[in-house]
Image 1 (cartoon, rainbow, N blue to C red):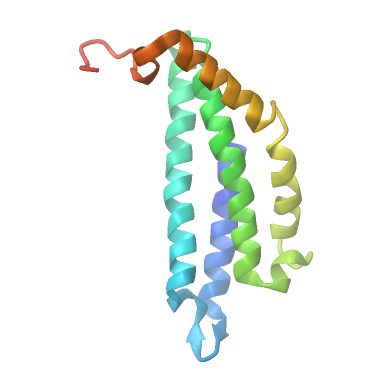
Image 2 (image 1 turned 90 degrees about the vertical axis):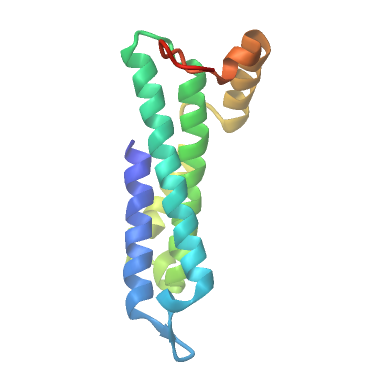
Length: 147
């Protein structure tokens, strides 16, 4: 969840800068490329929130949530890295300096991809669950719901 908050902060910093920075006579926030970068991050943050909520739901149910936690960890750790990178890209040299927290988040984001296991370990866990669960891998254990 902390990583989602940091990703959101990267987007906020980037949006704020894009709203007040002009380049070649156009506000950065009016550039389609900047809008696409920020829009993609917004969707990915919401996906990350859903993955984290799914893992929490499974834990609340008393489940081990190994596959749910692995999915959330992979997505959100990589999302944080992309959000920091995008924030720096939009802010330019200012983003990589100590003038913003983006520089620290970028360094932190790299280690987030290693904490609790590298992506490859979590992907192997997911593959193991797919092999053992078959079609049930895709099912949510909700009573009365169609699969």
